[in-house]
View 1 (spheres, rainbow over the protein chains, first blue to last red):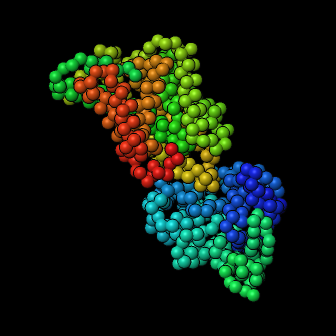
View 2 (view 1 turned 90 degrees about the vertical axis):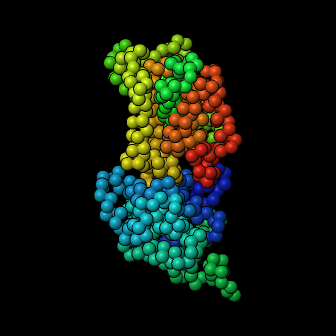
View 3 (view 1 turned 60 degrees about the horizontal axis):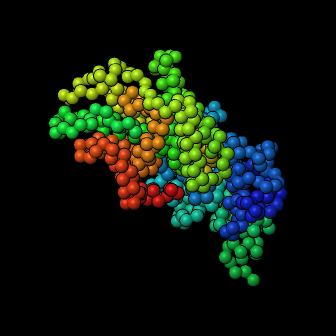
Length: 239
Length: 308
């Protein structure tokens, strides 16, 4: 699905990612954990084309996309749910979702109703609020809207940047339940989280990113029980 | 800015005169509103205040005047609007598109430069002379009777065309996919990109749209306000005042503020010499910038989010 080889990226002279290599296979949830400033968001931004890669390769479904513009990458089947939700605050929930389906519309699939119904089914609250301005939603609802908007594009790979940030524990649970459900429906998810425990408990595999380098990788279960991970990211004191 | 031609002497305020002022105020007011909406469209998608906005109005009028002897008036106007839209697109493509995250100040200086460029080009092409399109119906002395007062049918043309433009624009932004894409681009550019929208094209489109509405306003107003190579400057100042008064980016606010400024100017003639008319809008602009920079109808919290 997604293969990254020796990816380098940064801002100006600052190199944030240093030869990052990883892959995501179809149908799995892969999580990338790491501390603040490790380069997690930069990695997702680079995959989605918002930040230009300075070196290395990004291959999505057999096609190199490291030089493709961000708005074109969406058409290749890779959608990002950005950090901080980034909904269209001045537009209604329904309008937000329809714009999310614009990619499908351009591909000639004019039937956005089914995708809309599917999103409403995943997040019933969005249906209740469909006529409301997105800016007036609560943080959790905005997160759901951002996820729903990305789903409207029917992406082969959906990437999420810290969906749990700033949300109440109950809402976080609901969001993670939906991510699990997405996988059951055959979607592929690349999830970035600071909440390492929650992320690893639903993921199939995980990567640990530290100062721009992948320092650990493996099945999520193994990472959960790894001493280094426990000490650094799960806040557990293990001797 | 050519002054109101038909109210230059002092008379006691009869109900007929009162209505004359009202019509004059509304006519100019809706024109200011159109210029202000032109500012808003570009501001919303790019965060740029395009100081060449007034020049679009002048260009529309001038091009239509030049084309008019060669073809029927409606065709001349349509062509003038299309040509001005191309100029708008060209400006964006040549001067703005390739800039990578430019500062607001740099963009302001660029658009001021563009406005000077267009004005000087117009001076070379059309000279200093004052020109105008013919009246769409009748001539300068024909009039229609409304509510017991007589006004030029052209006034109705200006009000009618501008009102229809305002309504169509709001429908466009609300109900068409293209309008929604532009609105999305205004609300959050990164998110719009992530939805597969080419935001650069939206910016070009916003320049074309503002150039188009400015040019159309320039055509319908030409018979009563006349068109001169430097006519855009004054209009840009009025339009900017109105855009600020209405709350930058708020088009309904711009309509209200435009009509308010138009009426204020019209009635000022009865208490102040005509020469002070322009001073009024500048004074209002200054007071508003000091006291309520988010505008009469804008909200402080949304204004706080803007980088201007």
